Length: 212
Image (spheres, rainbow, N blue to C red):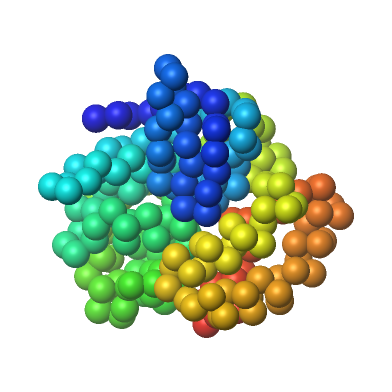
């Protein structure tokens, strides 16, 4: 198992990044919140897990070890594969996932594309005793814990947000509409911090599109 990678970020895309480790560029699938913390040309550490299938090897990357552990635990629920587990973490931070499961918050889990009422109820039953005590997520190596730690370049936020929403099941037109409505929020973030927090915008976009 590849437990983590550390190296220079050479490329960032809406659904992942390339991290150069020992002269080899590793493609890592990440949630928008994790991607938003990465900057091309800078070094980063990602906790990782390798998912092996008959026809593919996919490396998933996470902001920290806790998020990776939760990703793996989510897949112990019947019917939850890596893509759905990643979608859960794209919509909710780890502490919110644990809260939703422990408090049987079906609506919060239904906010994840691909999870209906029965699926949410089943996840709660199967995972309630497995997730354990909530632990706070920390920042990536090289990032501080300030609000600006999860930001991305102003020029990239529209594409990242739109691709994230499309990847979570909405049409391009719906995603473009949400991006347009969130432009004032992004402008406020830029005025306050000089950058845009895509993870925050993604959660607001999900609420706008009918998944509170």
